[in-house]
Amino acid sequence: MALEGMDAESIDRVYSVFSGFYDIVYGRFFHKSRAEAVRLLEVQAGDQVLEVGIGTGLSLGYYPKSSFITGIDFCAPMLEKGKKRVIENGLKHVELRQMDAMKMDFKDNQFDAVFAAYVISTVPDPRQVLSEMIRVCKPLGKIVLLNHFQNGNRLISSCERAISPLCRRLGFRADLPLSALLEGTPLLVEQVGAVKPLNYWKVVQCTNRKSAQWRGLNGVLPR
Image 1 (spheres, rainbow, N blue to C red):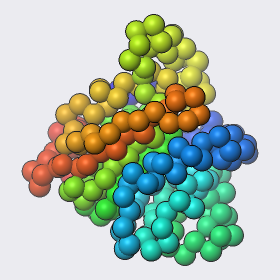
Image 2: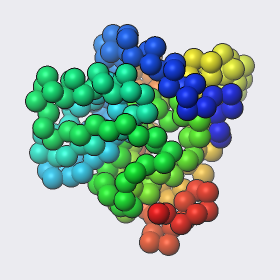
Image 3: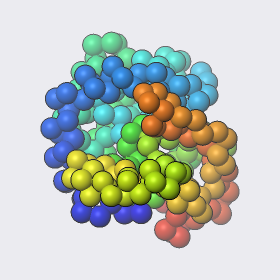
Image 4: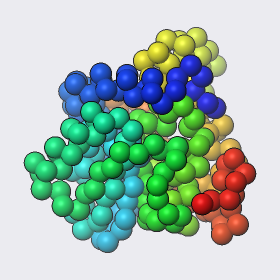
């Protein structure tokens, strides 16, 4: 599952470049999918919510202001744009921090819900990031993934594998299978839906069914 040929520093360089025009592309064409994904978090008043890969903060306007939002991102230029958005919009319920999603500096069971939009296929090790998301999410909390996953159609999935080396140079993988990502996790998939644009991306709503004895995906007890 590791993203061969791409380490954290390489991905950071790619998205530092993307930060200059990220909002133009992802803000205009992906706002409906982000809004739908945030809705599936089922955020209640007073909830603590973590967004992994917050980027420039495009989803921040969809959260209720009665909740408390923590956003993390590895890329400093993206995060700076996000912090500017927080200040300009007076989002006092939001805190943004620079952090590696594969080694989160949070306690176990700290968040009521965890969200990752267009990020799980851009990290060097998707399973490690998902393991951390599960660790910091409370039992029975919601975990929502918004991402492209490998198509079930044999012909299309073959094409995705063929172009994957090019995609990796651009900082993401096109051939990430959802089944392999979720295998062995305590996540109960509540629903999977295709979202616009083009229904190419999927939103996956999960409930964290971990027990106190759950070990991370690498077999190590949570910190």
